[in-house]
Length: 522
View 1: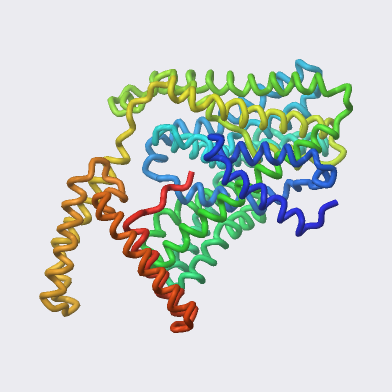
View 2: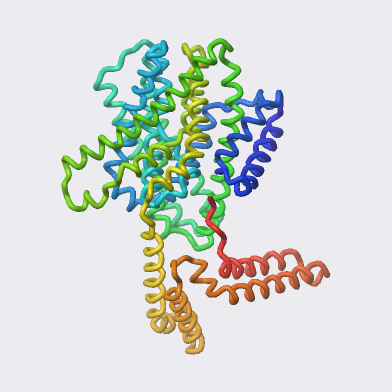
């Protein structure tokens, strides 16, 4: 048995290895983390590592969902709200009962099959975010938004099903409706409260470290408040994240915002990798927990359940689009229509992941068929991540999507508008702060140069705007590197202290990033 520190080192090493190898082998990092976890599970000592469901639901889920919500554009979410709500509520119920029917046809009890259906019904936000980045912007946002909300529906369905199976208590239709309303409205209200409280704190805290510590507490506070009220912690976290995404730009300082982006990117990428590594390790336990004689039938159910997920998802999207066209014939609705090829791609991009496995592991010990539920859930998660993960790039090419230039054009227009506004404000602001004419003219000249670069940029991206041409960037980076080497040499000769080195190197690094901005994290 590996001690806790050994588990941390092992999982961390596999996360680093997966992130490093992914670009070389051209496999998504999430999928590679899963495969590395599976391979490490063959080591006898590693097999004893287990992933408690509460760790996923309490530690991983609030953080990952909060960051996904924080980086999901609310404008696009509102545009496709009807479709997103249908996919994240009604589709979850239809999928759960579809899986339950498949299981019942293979001899499973209805309760066990429905619990499995509730576990497999929601798509996984972290898997979708990690594996569908090559999708056009609108399609990717719709998938992410659906994955943020449908976890709440699945957890309510799971709670009701397990409650009926374990206690024998039958829920009336009104009771079920009450639980759903409490989950969504209660979770939403608590999320709003957490978002408002978080906004008030961020506006009054000026220290960057303290401000970001408060941001870390927001998703856990929202989740805890919702759980205490027997509402949906998932909905509370998502709503809080969406609120902070709207109020955050006006709160805090530039330093706190830069620090927050860096910290959350590292933390969520690390937690996401650790989660998939642990899922891979847990898959070993799922295989060993069932009798060998039952494995062939369970493998068949894995394949049939996976195919059912795909067929139900595609059919639901087609029927939903048909119904919306019947009831809404506005011209604006016609502009939002998608071809069937896009629905095929959306079907393949509907990955299952950590939430499904966490729900399966949350089935109480002694529940009839628990080991089989975990086995099939693990098998389906593996099939969606491996097979669909491999098929998605091919499906995107087959989908023949129109070039998605909306975000590029919007970025360029926003950069141009804000730069012109800044340039026009220079005389007034110079007079307000008492800046001399030489400083005023210097700032104005810099902004005129930035405007010329924006107008010359073909794609409006930050590197094209700030790095200007390649020769300018190359010379500037070379000079800054020489400056840094001289600074380090002064420290080595004891001419300056490490503190002085750290302060001045931070300033040099800012200039380097201005000339060569980092690539977006995949």
